[in-house]
Image (tube, rainbow, N blue to C red):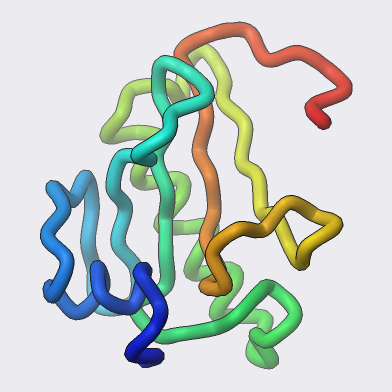
Length: 113
């Protein structure tokens, strides 16, 4: 955990949020600046700066299991949703802690950026 990382503060409970989902490795909560009617972030409880820092790819599989559970909880699984992982400055990553955006509740357009 990084003391300066806002998502580490959330994961540790030092910054309170209303979790949508939590297990032993991941948690999900509403984005403070939603870009869709449903916009939730799934974060690892362990600090990884970005997708590129995860060496164990099975961990990413477990992250996708958490994403799948969250979309079921949010009831966007039937109509569709988007999962986004911004990585690095050019990728639009603003918080240096790996996180997965789940967006749904409307038709998504393309291109996204």
